Length: 139
Image 1 (cartoon, helix red, strand yellow):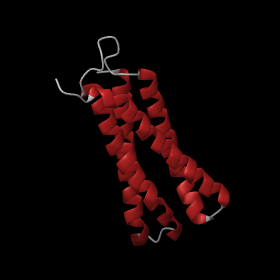
Image 2 (tube, one colour):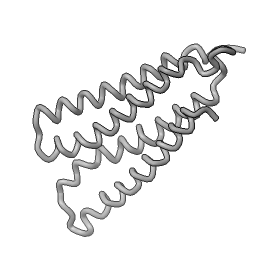
Image 3 (spheres, one colour):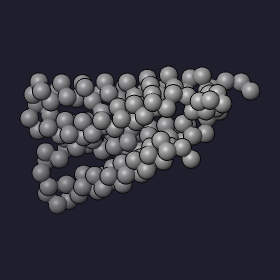
Image 4 (tube, one colour):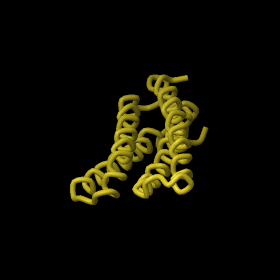
């Protein structure tokens, strides 16, 4: 299994556990009278689950299992793939920080951080597609 695949899958597993834990906190907020400001964590929960867990797991398995790019570069441009990993996770972590901050005290700064986080995640998606495109072909 390629090193990047291991990193993607292990990181995905961490986000899975984190999203489930956050889900428990969000479910308990009404039952235990926790701060209503926790509602700002709902988008974080969904991003941890869908981007952190599902998307990252798919990226890892696809990077590993898709047909070879070439004998010399079986998985395409590995540097681009590592940049995708860094961009995806930087965007996700920024989102996890900025979403509740902007929800609690809306400001132009936190709105800009949200845009940057979205751009990082979008660029990660573009890098993934660019690296995988030529690996999708007929026999």
